Amino acid sequence: MRHYLRDRSCMKKTLFLFLLNCSVLAAQIMPAPTELPGDPFFIKQAWHVGGNGDSLNAMVLDPVRLQLVLASRNAVVAEDVKSGVVTGKISETQGAFGIALDNTNEFGYLSDSLYNHVVVFDQRALRAVGRIHTAPNPTTVLFEAASGLIFVVCNVPAPGSRGYLNFTERPWMRTDVAVPPLSRSTQARPTPRAAPARPTAHNSQSGMAAKDENFSVVTVIDANTWRDLADIKLPGHIAFVQTAGDGKIYVSIPDHKEIVRLDAEMLGEKLRREVADTGIPPEHTPKEVQLRTGQPFAPGPDWPRVSVQTLDWSGSRKSDEFRDGAILIFPMDRDCSEPNALAIDIRHVKLFVSCEKMRMSVLDANTGQLVTTLPTGPATNALAYDADRGLIYAANSGGNGSLTIIRQHISDSYAVIQNLPTDHWARALLSDPGTGLVYLATDYSDPEGKKLPSDPAPRGFQLLVIGH
Image (tube, rainbow, N blue to C red; front, side, top):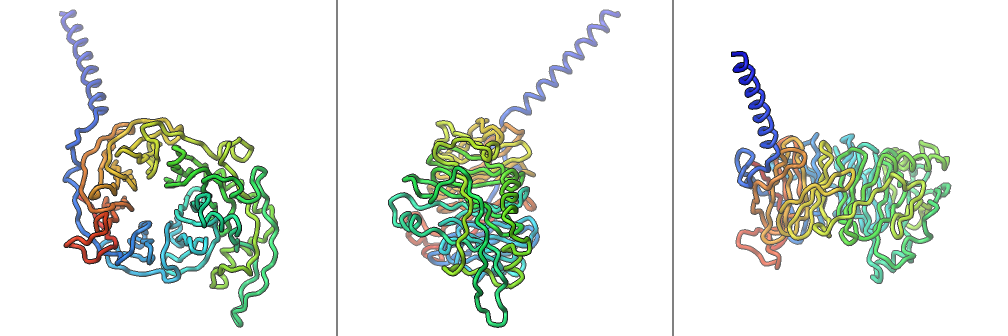
């Protein structure tokens, strides 16, 4: 009897361990492609926003005022997320290529490639309150919350082009210097005070276009002072930048087949310390002067040129005391030779990268090591990640346009659960973590520009509201 009870007890333990192992294995199994999160996603609404000849460049969500801020070729507008009604317009700029909002819910930043500066606007009043000059041709704007820095991507014209020649012959203007307030009585522009030249990094060159190479510049701006701190020179043409607000930013460079990770907190600490050594009084920061006078700096030849240090992290990429730890290079494998759009899972430390040939790569965000690859759609132009729901969205602009929806089961387990047909040239993408809705910008017309029967305009863009 004792042997029977002992054997039965052993059998129960063995069965328990077997079932436990089975449950662990079941959790690792990839979900079937037909498994959907409740109901399938579908297009709930379509809002006509852009007019004839307009196209959307970027959009961000203002979670406090529940509005989308849209930067298009012809205008910058705010739109109510529930009704799709335009609630305001920033009239001081005709359009923008990039847009970002800070974490104070007070200021936003728009790139203006015409005058090579960033327009600072009041989020509440939707009006310009400042300007910060950048390197030539600013496009994407990114605010990094942990460091309080603004990163502005400036894709320098290709060697041999007319724009490239102008760039080498006419250095861009700098206006972020200590200047007296503008006179309110006469509105006259006084002679600006000279400001101490900023230190130049030991590896910078005189003239960023000295080499006949294709490169980009990332202008780093202090959001607390609106002072540009440095220009970082990177090789190739930058396609996309992204951050999760954890002090790191990621840059995709397709023509060099790599992802660059910058430590924003380390950069901010050193660059702010170097600017503080110039002796400029805190009360004369560009932010303080422009807000106090109520007039943004205006671009023009009568403002002084101030040297800004250049960190040349292109070319041979020799290590120096500033660069160590501040930049990491993740070379992509042959399955993703052209990295483009990015999204980040900060909780599981994963980086999602759209690739050519309808693929998305999942990388370890600390090491760049490949975790897995997944199918998307033709010409994936944008990615978005919903951390609360474990969903990844890929906007595919090829073909007739589509949205690939990927479910994340555990940190390294993913599966495509739906491919939703959308419309031509699906590109700008945004996921609202509060509602779970997805906003996708598409064109009205087909790739050849022909008017479709249902099009209210021959060209333009619309916003699709997608949910389930």
